[in-house]
Amino acid sequence: MKPILIIAEVMDGCIRPVTWELIAAARVIRDLIQTNRAGGKRKAAQIAVIVPAQDPVPLAREISSLTKVDVLALKVPTLVAYTSEAYKECLAPLIQELAPSHILVAHTSQGRDFAPGLAIRLNAASISGVNQIRSDGDGLLYSRPGMNNTRNMVLRPEPGFPLVLTLTPGIFLARPCQVKDPGAVMVREISFGPKQPVRMVHQKIARRENEHQALKKAHTIVAAGRGIGERSNLESVARFAKYFSASALGASRPLVDMGWIGYDHQVGITGASVAPRLYIACGISGSSQHLAGMKGSDWVVSINKHPEAPICSHADVCIVADVIDFIRVFLEQEDALQGKI
View 1: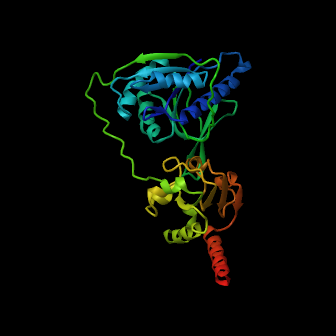
View 2: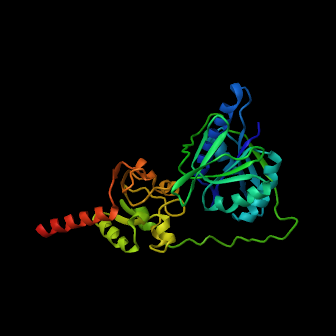
View 3: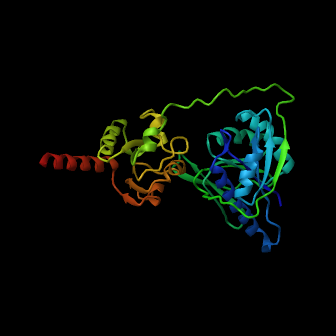
């Protein structure tokens, strides 16, 4: 059986938690492949993690001690920090040598950056933003968002090619813990760019000051989506948010992309990951990217006129109504109550 490889997500010299989710997804794929085999007689596919870094051994040992998965510490002396060029140069020859069936990468800003180019170098199929993996008996099927996150596309890759997958964080949950028999750690050293000059040099990571701090400190987040209809309706949503203590105004990515609100308000994979006591989603359909960003919320309320919207399946309370009509009535009632006091 061909192995299943995982590219660990390394940032600031640390293993990012999404790596544990990739390992959980690899186990799902392994079990589905095994189930599809007649009688389940063939040996299960091996799962291995590749850790590319200047000093990958401590990171590799961390992974092996928290899982039973073998880890390949890919030591790259010139890899001061991540660049897509460095990752593709280092990983492609090694992966070709190992000849895996699947290569799993996190659907993060880093993973989305290098995975497509890596797939091209490997002559591999590539599916990005995978949010479900299942089998129909004829093979594995992979779901990913499509049509501007309003639908799920179900894909079956052509056989005979390796498959590069970027997996949406928050879908395949895993909680690593100390194991009695850790996986093996193997070390491989490699240099990249020996045949040609380096075309991309890491300078620094420039973080915005106080980025998303209001969202991360808030006890209540009232988030607006495209369901609010018009940009002018943001004022009503912001006013609605002020009725809750320690609140902040959030937004889905489309509103930020359209320039209706600043990036500091964006919730989701490419924005802030939040964990408030109360999350009120106003006119948000609930793409997998957005759900991954607010999955830590204690209590979720959805206000949406479409009861079949994905977010309604994740909400503790779903109010089926036009969000602007609901907020208008709410504000009128509150104003009336305050007028009586």
